[in-house]
Length: 351
Image (tube, rainbow, N blue to C red; front, side):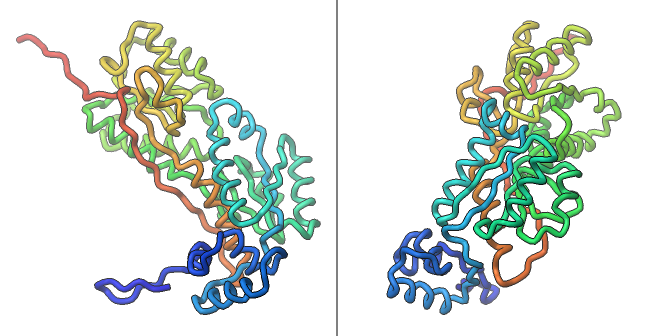
């Protein structure tokens, strides 16, 4: 399929959706027909195959009615219950799998032994075409996947050696965009509230650093506050302690997640600091509850459902007849401005 513009003819890769639309069938039916699976009339299968051939569509290996193992870390499953980031990622993944006629088999992972067992299951099962690893990107796990014979894609994970493909939000640029937004509002003392540990969160921290570095503020490191978990109560305690011990030495907070942003607002309320009149707050994730917080939370929207769908697409690409190198896909994030931020008004100093 080609589109012609002012500079000439530009090629666009034909997608399964294009074939389905051309033949007037569902994506699942097109997938089953191209994979040779049961349940498609012979005449319809022939028409779909002909359309694929005419469009130079790259037919992947048989995938309909097959299985993909989703290995989810204990961190991801805790998150599933706590603030639902994982819930929305899985919703997007399962919607895409349903459209393609693929079964997702979930395997919770809490130990190295369970990681080994999942990889062995995927290696030996003829029905399993590949694995998705959700919030699993520690070095030990990545080492276990060396020379694995089937595709593996990290969801919300980061392989620094690029041995495995991965799908994440654009964490670093999201951190920078959020910080630059606060800078445009006149804030210079922007505190970063985070929980360390995962590379994806470190990327958000690096984005904050990128924007703050332009201020040439060598004291910016003192504006980093760390907590041991994503619980709002811990964020509230950290901010309350900060203000009580050192005073209000910041005018804005960028939190590495919405749950910590909510906690930051709680902590400020405890010490009598008003949001956004005295301190602006920006979160990251844009979970549904962010819009109902008081005040409604300004935050970076993370395309959670799209991350899940994109991960399955990436894995299916690796099953095509053309060998693809590992690649890192980052999905764009956008700022959602609500009422937890405002332009900084400098106090008037009398002559």
